Amino acid sequence: MAGAAPSVLFDNHGRPLEYLRLAVTDRCNLRCFYCMPEEGIKYMPKQELLTYEEMERLVGLLTGLGVRKVRLTGGEPFVRRDLVPFMARLTAIPGLDDLSLTTNGVLTAPYVPELARLGVKAVNLSLDTLDRARFASITRRDELPRVLDTFYALLASGIQVKINAVVMDGQNIEDLVPLAELTRELPVEVRFIEEMPFNGGSHAATLPWDHCRIRQHLEAHLGEFVPVATPAGATASEYSIAGHQGRIGIIAAYSRTFCGTCNRIRLTAEGGLKTCLYDQGVLDVRALLRGGSTDEEVAEALKSAFRYRAANGFEAEQRRPVHQLSFESMSTIGG
Ligand code: SAM
Ligand code: SF4
Image 1: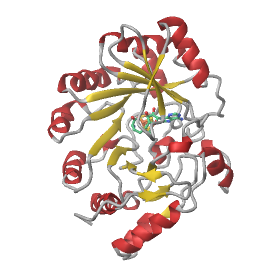
Image 2: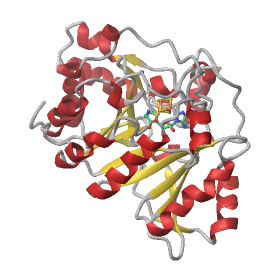
Image 3: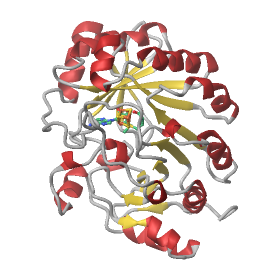
Image 4: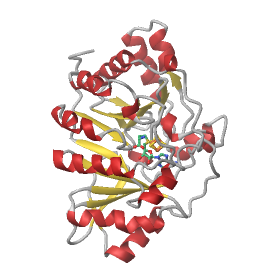
């Protein structure tokens, strides 16, 4: 599809789809409490994961349909071998303006110079606490020092850093202010995410800390939040604070306040298309790729899937044949 005229794909609600979140693996080297059980999830056999060649073909095809931004996620992207050479191949795809990734930072630091060379402008780093013992308890691995190495390497490289912190009642509430305080001296965005129920069955979902309570708590300690304009399709409400270099973001991931402008396409590691974070997967793209479909046939199937897209995450959840969201792990969905 290289060189194809950009023709933006719209869903049945008139929303443009310009952003692909691509899970390159379901495997992970951490066991975050909110994402999967202590024993981990049942990983897919390797042959069921999309190959890099299949992913590259899909990205080429989707840029032909107007996708401009790709975020690699997982699982942990860096546990998949040869990730950086794969990224280099993606950067050569015409029409792809923005390649970024979300990482837990455990293995990432040594790759930061290469990411900068490839032109990666922004990296989302998941970090729920600055306290080593609490980090070990939340992620069930004692890896905070290596994650901080990645944080400092990213800052030094000039790559824009967004910290993602999931807000968990009884786990990291004392960490919210110290994390937010990073924005005082550093030009980073610290984003607080409502906990969603996709935890692979570790615990039942409740939402004691919704976006309103998170904001109130932080404002009580840091002063008034001034809303900042965000690009269309943004999930985070962003705020500046007087005297702070960085910004605060709050993501109402479970309250789902941002669905009206959602521009995301999600592909799971085994090639399942999700038109919404809360749907159960609406198309087996891998079966099309491996069944010999042409680019045109795959593109048509993707377009058809978006003609039936739910209006919002609540409708997508209602349409699920199986309603219990906690059976799924975010490691499979990709966040
Ligand atoms: N392993 C990488 C990482 O942690 O950054 C990438 C994949 S992870 C599934 C992507 C994002 O989803 C992370 O920022 C993580 O904090 C977030 N996440 C995982 N489970 C979540 C949950 N149950 N609720 C809210 N966010 C969650
Ligand atoms: Fe792994 Fe990311 Fe899930 Fe944590 S949130 S277990 S780092 S995939």
